[in-house]
Length: 218
Image (cartoon, rainbow, N blue to C red; front, side, top):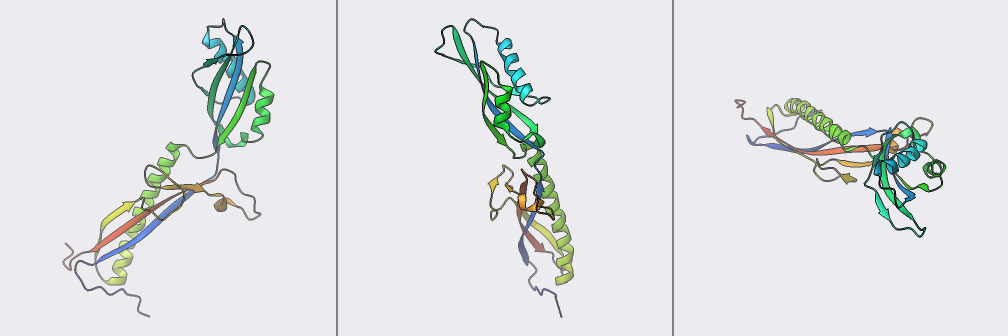
């Protein structure tokens, strides 16, 4: 069977799409908490209040770095006291992603409450950017392989005319570099059907245009 592709024009083009994707297991998650602290209205030393909140966060999950927002001092019906509200955010190991609300309750104490727990298992932007760059390189390597394969099939020389990364046609949220992000649980199921939580798939689609070279190869 003859598998050659016959082309006759000197300015022939080949257009096709290529996709590269990577699935990452959830090894960490971002956690946010609201902290409500009842403090004396006469307490002006903000560092004292922050240390009290930090102590509660350390009881909740130790050995992580919490980012604490500006203290918001509001009214309270108890005479002589104010309610101090802050939001605390940290990147936490995925192994700690369990029973968050109950553990936050146990870490609270009288006059200081951790509540409104929120967990985001999506990958950090820095990781996504690195993965997208790797996917671009993977697609370019594939195109270079395709050049040799198309030369074998057509008997013609080809060059890269255009590569457009981040074209449509794939579901999921989009990154600034044109890749799509979606849940990747299905890629990480083992033979016994036990998946890894927090998996995320990053996909990048590219539109490829190859142009034929004249017979003299220039």
